[in-house]
Amino acid sequence: MERSSFRTSQRFQRETPPPNLNEVDAIFTVATTSAARYVSNSSSDNTTRLDEALKGIIQLVADVDKTTRLTLKNRHLKEFLEYTPFILNASTTNIVTRSKFYRLLFSIAHHNIPIRRFMAGELRLLGAVFSCLKASLQEQLGPQNMIDILRLLQVLSYEKMYHWNIGQTTSYHF
Image (tube, rainbow, N blue to C red; front, side, top):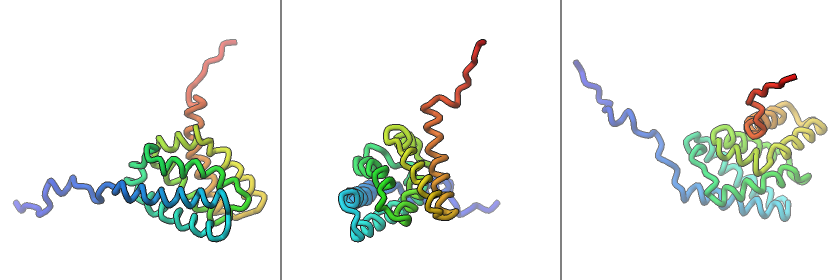
């Protein structure tokens, strides 16, 4: 019988190493700084910086393993998320930036339950995203925009249902 050159130890090795915590921290530090600048002054320069920071985070969360390892113990991540409702609700936020936020937030919320609970619960992001849905309908921003918003609303509403105990059956006695 021929032996495989593929060892047992190789079968169970990680394909990618765990994310470098310094890399994650650096990405969210830049993103938080960019978000803070944008909230205080939504100039085109600050918008460009925020879009570049979002691009870096989107690349980071494209890897499901890295997304699931994100934690609210990272103060830069938590602070960045806290800016999100303000940026989404700002009338000066352009559609491209909002679209990046929808994709980013969906990726994080879809793969990281503790952060999803934070977004839906403490952060109350569902209301901000719903406001974006209303604006998108009024401005007729197109089907892809609607799909991105609805996907984010769907994943965030999982936790609202959990918090409201909608999933539990209640018996009524008449």
